[in-house]
Amino acid sequence: MSDEARLTRLEMRLSEHEATIEDLNRVVTEQWRLIDRLARQVAALHEQVETVAERVPRGPEPPPPHY
Image 1 (cartoon, rainbow, N blue to C red):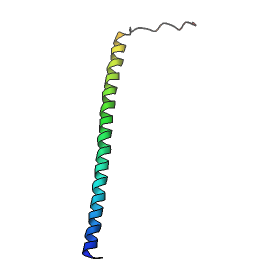
Image 2 (spheres, rainbow, N blue to C red; image 1 turned 60 degrees about the vertical axis):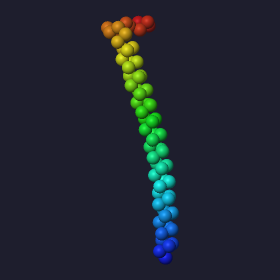
Image 3 (cartoon, helix red, strand yellow; image 1 turned 90 degrees about the vertical axis):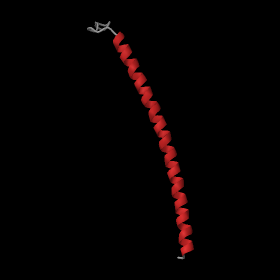
Image 4 (cartoon, rainbow, N blue to C red; image 1 turned 135 degrees about the vertical axis):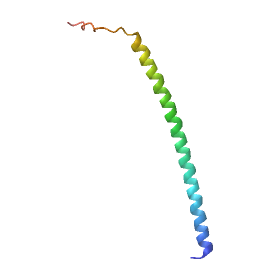
């Protein structure tokens, strides 16, 4: 294999690797945004549950109506 053919082959592989890295970077960035948004939603839901739990009276539960 000539040097020119080897160089061309290496350049093509480098180009393919760069495209793959860009694709992976784009996917990771999108996933990070999604994870961040979901984490904020979970935190907000956690706060809502705590707020509701504080409002509920704490004591023994009354028996169900069929007793």
